[in-house]
Image 1 (cartoon, helix red, strand yellow):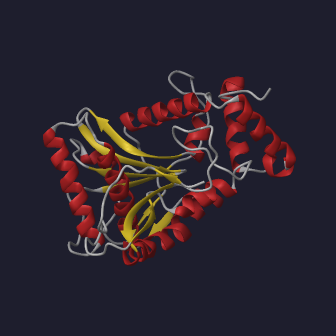
Image 2: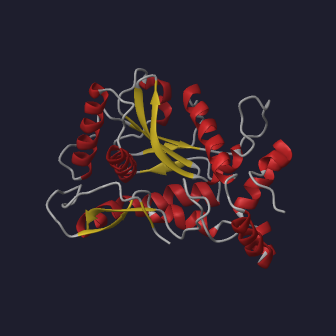
Image 3: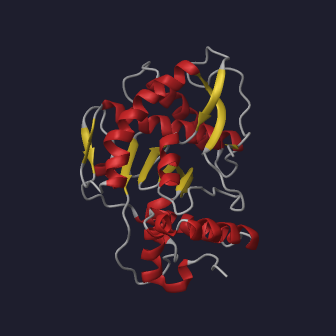
Length: 302
């Protein structure tokens, strides 16, 4: 099953604005979903507000023409090979990148913001919505090489890892599962300063729309040319709080899985027990069970 959000209604390519030969475009690149699916206990995903539906792919929109799909793929391919897979499969602590990575991050922020602009950002003021539109246009022009840099709408990349301990206060019992496994794009509104938030399993991409303290994550800022991610990055408290809030929300959604779907999940896991116990999703669940006990299960197997 393909998840089409049907939130956009456009007739020409959103990037080049020339072609009307639109394709089904991923908001989050397909390689992210392919990895999450391949390393899961069941081989399927359950996304967003429909936990009772298992899916094979991520969110799709008729957004780009074929030429612009190819353009973005030139940034996605090296990111997958040199950033995403080393981070997720080898736990590489320092990841070097070239100029393609800033373009990749811009493409993620741009696509995510297009999606949410289409849904409507009613909580934002008219002035802030103008910043949203300015960011969309700046990132678009950067992606098609009409400008050399995306400033002032800077981009940040943060590698995530499991937590080792917790005092339990404010930390949801599925926090490791969320940090390590979830794909979660959105817009974070912090005290009137919105940020694009795109969590690609263990890689968090943030696009700044209007930020009062750009130095808060200066070590996470993506350079215009070469650079690296993976060194010690102090995440601002409000982003840590938002991660916990999103994890709690994911836990609540998982608790809504029907008994019929729970039976289906159980049968799939039992059918290939070796895959289940060796999967990344089982490892993340085990971390949470060791830390939080039975509360780690949003809904227990009967």
